[in-house]
Length: 137
Image (cartoon, rainbow, N blue to C red; front, side, top):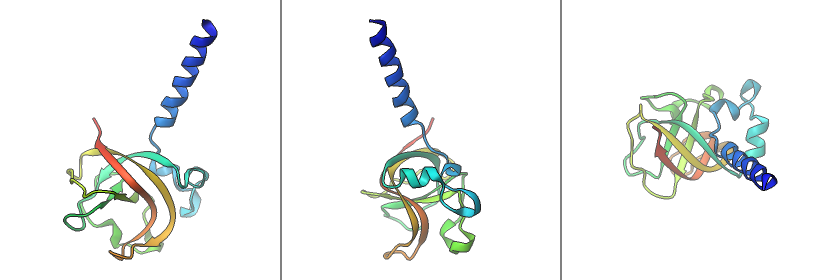
């Protein structure tokens, strides 16, 4: 019985660790390169806490997730000036916008690598695709 209880405690502990959100700083290494964690998590589902930047266009199935509340267009930077505290979030449905200062949790499949969106022309280095979000308490 004790062995079973110990196993359950260890199992639940690993589930809790897996559900912990990553931080923006976990995705980049020195000099703006991708971190070991980002490379290991590439293609996997991750969870990140941040803020939804104001939408760049109405009726969109994407938004920008930022580390801090941001009230301007983060995609207006070149790759050389790319901030390491934003990421593109692509959803499978139109986004219901939340206030830019409301914290949210986003869960989606991590993609890394510089990419220019063919529809919008926006540059991104880190993306969450097939993502869903919920407001944080």
